[in-house]
Every structure is written in structure tokens, then in C-alpha cells.
Image (cartoon, rainbow, N blue to C red; front, side, top):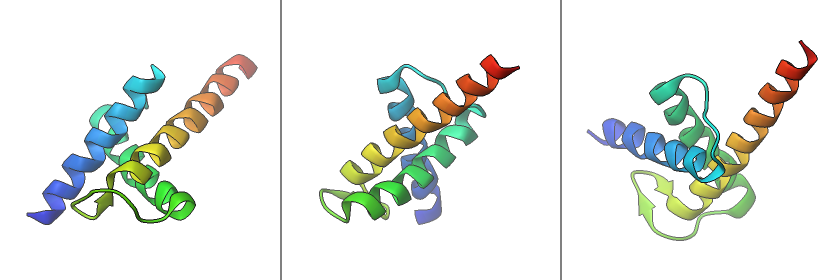
Length: 84
């Protein structure tokens, strides 16, 4: 059951990061889950472990990491579209 919560929380974090930046992650729900999970890892590496913890995610670092990831991915995809 904790794996399902892990996916749900990862998806919500990725979705919120995309909504805050006004940019979509390719892949829909799966892309949001991946962005949330990788963003949580990035946030944990950059900011450490602090704040409330839900299903192995420290919410604040995970959210900030997901915002960073969404920004970088959208920047790369936009530059690839312009180059084509």
C-alpha cells in the first residue's frame, strides 16, 4: 500500500509543480509521477530532509526539486522545438 501512496504523492507533487510554472510535463500522469519522484530526489540532495514527511517524501524539498526539474525539462524541450 505504501508504494501506491508513493506514486500518488509523486504525481501530486509533479502536477503541482507543473501548475505553478504553467508548463506541462510530457507523458501526462506518468510524466507527473516521474517528475515528482525525481524532483523529490533532487530536492532531497539540494535541500536535505526537512518539513513534513508523507510516504517517504519530505514535502517542501520534493516540491522545490520538482519545480526545478519541470523548469529544466520545459526549457530543454522548448529549445529543441526552436532548433527544429
